[in-house]
Image (cartoon, rainbow, N blue to C red):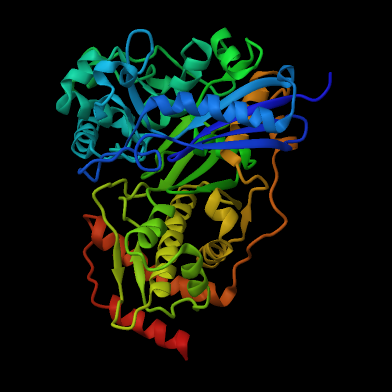
Length: 536
């Protein structure tokens, strides 16, 4: 039979990546990356800080550029490519016409921001999200039970409803709104299937109540007649085969199966070897935390509990933080206090608690467990002698405290976290962050063997639908793994962080939980005490 390979396409916030993988052992034979050409680093912004869009033309160009480049580097024969998988950010919906073409590719809407893809971190639908949450609590509480109790402005219906109210010319011209992770496979195959990953986690889809939200619910929101797919499909399914047109453009055989699309984090978890008891943290501009379980009760604050969204036969559990790498980038790019390398070195020289600082990691709102995009960042304990390195370490620690809050919520509701596997650029490149995460959580931090787990997960999906493996478990067994280096928690550091986390939790509840009735009078003085102890 000879060697066989699959392609994984990974559409991130700033770039698209193509990975070609040997399906027999997970060896990554080539990769190619391309930065989107529209906007700033691929994101189209405006004077509204809540707005973030992408041009769908970049998705098509990115597929062609990266696949052709990766194929050239890999030096594999086209006939050896047996499957393709696709992951994208999400919820990133876009309006399309009756032929499935993105409205932004029509000259009439080419420069209309509302006709483009509404990137995951677009928060313009904050008011709509609150309205959706309120209506669901009133007449469909079970809708919210599977998405943490609150509907987010980052999600599908918030964005569609906001478009209807602010850009009716776009809404009226759209035949349907589709997720980016569904649109790209449809372009490659000429066939459309909605994936359960996007539908379940972002659009309240659940087969137990017949699929998507019902007509009465949507009508009460003013979304009468909104077209939605009849059903959502598992990632174990194929959308169809590569069209002749795309085969010619890419230099590949027509008919290669393309897997149903999914979100980057969920397929990243697959690429990191997720299984029951394993928490996979995909750490990038934001963080997504993924687990799978055979069963669980509803968990307040999670971004979704969806059957088959990560692994077939298991519930996929999603949580996360709306900004992690973006917080570090803010400090470097906007405050201009130094490079990441310089600040990381300065942070590494500090002991836990030595800075006297404590931060909240809400610079882009809170995804889990509060699900409130109107929350903002906070830094407590500054003096006239506070240094950039101290602030940078406090920001890292804040994201670690946010990560611990998610772990605690999962275990509070009976989902045991037996091991943590990290992946993404920060996990790969910054051992200081990984050590702080280990010390804060009191848990070993493992790192996925692959530096490109999202693309690897997509390649695994391509291999499964191509029949190279009977199941995802079989594919993961030979195609995934973790690095030998494990970041183990330091007992003394963890003891200090237990004190700091208690203060973080106090700020967390005091600024964001309406039922909290304490005060903050102890926080600053306790930080000084911890700082003095650390420096003695």
